Image 1 (cartoon, rainbow, N blue to C red):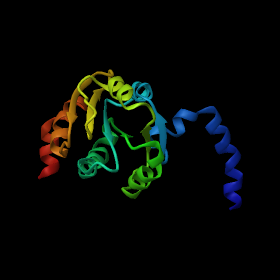
Image 2 (cartoon, rainbow, N blue to C red):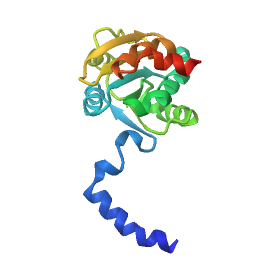
Image 3 (cartoon, rainbow, N blue to C red):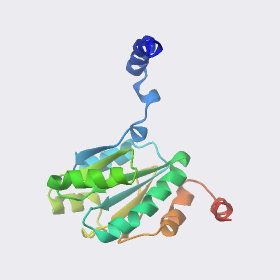
Length: 179
């Protein structure tokens, strides 16, 4: 305990001097931030990832719940290769705790978002291909361009097939992993 007390001032100074190098926001503990469509796009633009999959879901949406394990598996598999997963709950803000409990129960330990904007404003601000149905996912490249959208549940294999070229991973890597 005494050693920890001696280190605290040093860690504090390092955190003040080098905040971004010690902890990337994406690697920090779970949080759920209220957001608008602009906030989602800001998060995408600020990402340093080669690819970001943004998934819009809700706790009451059965296809969303069925898809979630594949999304989390995709993040676990490719996070260290430049991939980010941004989960945006479309639950009502009064249902925030249900969304938090659901994600933490699945082991999500990184920042997420909760829609806090009128539905049509939010939907129209996200992407022209989205009519509001859930789940909805969009894959965004490192330049901020949407390269693919999915309305409805997508499988791990479908998502991975679109993701690998953005990460500059050849399919042979996937084939080796599957063997």
